[in-house]
Length: 182
View 1 (cartoon, rainbow, N blue to C red):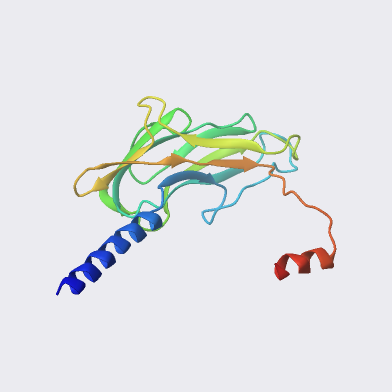
View 2: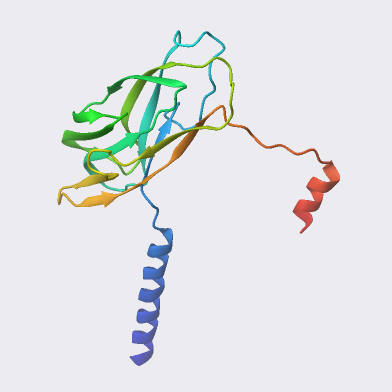
């Protein structure tokens, strides 16, 4: 009987450790495609290309009834409007709080906003221009409200890039094969 208790206790401790390790941090990001990614400035003259991007909540693992955040737009983007399905206070460029009459499924990535904007650049005059998502400037929080208990869940803001660079390095097939032999 004592062995059984020890084995059960050990399994319980291991399962708690596994759930803690596999926990993921909720984050909010600005993406040019709802599947993720980034974009480059178009080749057309500044102010002539209307585009849209998305604010996406990831890894929340809950039913969400509200969220608040802000987006710091660079000069290369002229913010026009937010297109959300809920009730809004503010706008994403100064800080927005959005609530929905029915809880939203945030177990999967949830599009919380579609942002309409004009490009204010031509080509890529600079590289790695950041678009950080952060707290709502009015409240100072980047968080969501969990349904049905109305618990507050903190999140992390991610930074997207315009005209991002991909570092490359010249090498030989022998060097690449050597990587897999180790």
